[in-house]
Length: 308
Image (cartoon, rainbow, N blue to C red; front, side):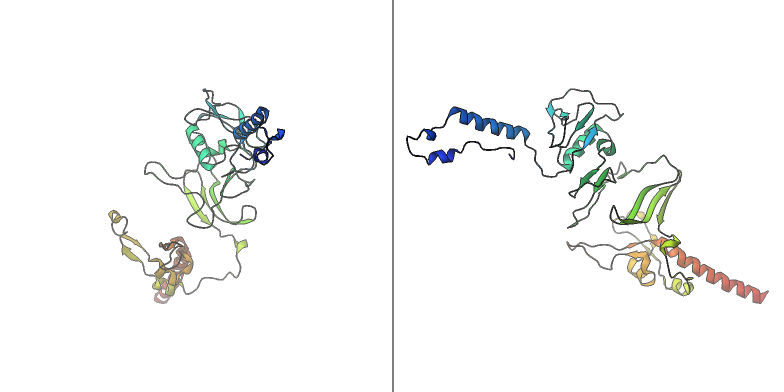
């Protein structure tokens, strides 16, 4: 109870000489202490899991209309907040208008409330400072900012697909916009390195290729020789044999020929000793295959010229 201030030191009275008038505990002193304790209990706010600065939100239902049902409880308001939001017994926010929920301190509280309301997280968090999870300070550039603890396991957002609904959905009303953008660096100092975009009918997965990002540019040579070194395979997946025989590459074999097409290390493991499986981006092979095709066409055309 951080707001409790002890007014009367009863322990000090015990050390006084018998008969000393100050040794007597007065009723007014007890009243004072009880009042201080009651005030501390009523105003206490646990700082664990703090979201940062107070957040102002407009609470609405799924159709965007203010909620108007009855209330049976009150959310605490942190320092700097005004107008506590109210809850019913099931933890549903049932107040109208703009309220401060700075006293809702944990990520679990926010998720429980927003999912019960069936409203979007972006509508729930409207602070210009954003909402921050996993770090001390919110980032002002985003409605919600997630940062992993960086010490173990995966970070960011994990979407668990229940086989009925997609894990993550991205919607846009524009026919030329990024659904997801990827950057290297920090939220304030970064370079764009790729994106997932839509043209209104299809989706494109883009990696950086602007000439302004490149130097030492020379034609790709000796492509046919390298293509001959590629070793495509037929195989089945251990975890999904029902797919039957499929075609592809073995990551470390492809890595020996086209290192930039493979991610991870052969036989790599994480900090817990679990396998970190290699991945392949076969789109990287397009340049090599195109160069090999051009070399082959040049040879074919040369032979045709001799025969003709």
